Length: 473
Image 1 (cartoon, helix red, strand yellow):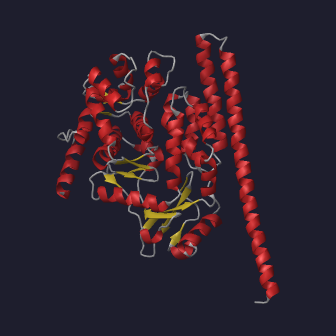
Image 2 (image 1 turned 30 degrees about the vertical axis):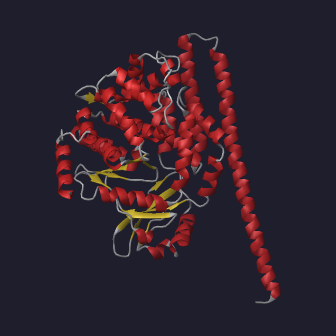
Image 3 (image 1 turned 60 degrees about the horizontal axis):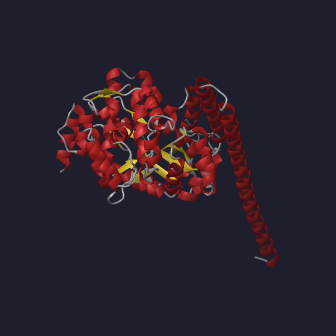
């Protein structure tokens, strides 16, 4: 190649590279400015709200608080709904406390659980080409340009492999890594964002710090593939749990191909399910979560409605293993001694265990009965022989747990929840919210004891699972 042409190419390539850097920098600046404006609006709004409520009556304050939460939720949902990456995921993470907010605020934030705006077909094709070496129409026998789902980090396309198998292909958004790193680098902004729409005593710093630690892992679909393969192996031939298999030869760091999952999504299931089908689905969800926590030492930390498919045969398919939490050595063992005294209403023993694992300082001076009353609220379904989950249960318990001016304010101010349990809390509340929407009634204590104490099976599903486990030995 002539030297002038080489020089021209080099100059052009250099200009293109500089242009790309400039565009990325401009994007980060614009994104940061947009988030800064959101944070400033919410901070100013909170300051104004706090000043106005000082002179109001208690009844008026409650209405003002509800109105403020609604306005904040609408503002956050409007800004984050069109942003890929950490900020949209942060908005989705707020869903675990959604049932503790006013109904209009719930509706606003619930929109973040739905599909995000999809990327252009050409961009999705470019990612597949970069990762798998050819256009999707060449890699796959059939390829649907229109995604079947779009979320915070990637979108899912339906396709067919050359051998005829139907698959789901998750394609990561171009540039989402830059967006994540930019968003996650500003911890104070994330703290402010969460604080603006949550109730007063939620430990937002622990929640955000856990989120920041986990979310960069989600960028590497190879990690998700490994987690999903682990779950699929553990639940192979299970009587009521389905995990789609990963197709490794069509997967990479930014493309994840798995078996196609049939079944109704959450809304379609609720619309067509009988009462018996709802009750079975609720028990399946509960058993999957408890089995993963107690038997596998690992659990999926993203229990929102979009991650399930409900089969006509009563099975449930579990999707999306990007946010998986594994117990570190000793973590679960430190938590288990708390469960027995809590469920047995043994106030003194519970207090001693909480002190020994660092949930309370030895000199806290709290009444054991008040501590038990507070920490047992999420465990009310397991204190009686039978319990029915309702949306009102989640709302009322969260309101109690997050009320800094209520009767348990001294307990709340003294508790130090380890950050490693933040994702577990999300799972617990996410599960409670889902069971509430299903109106789930069962002997939840007996089912829980199957997993934590290896108690005999207490239901037909428990007996089916016990037979499956025995056959695998």
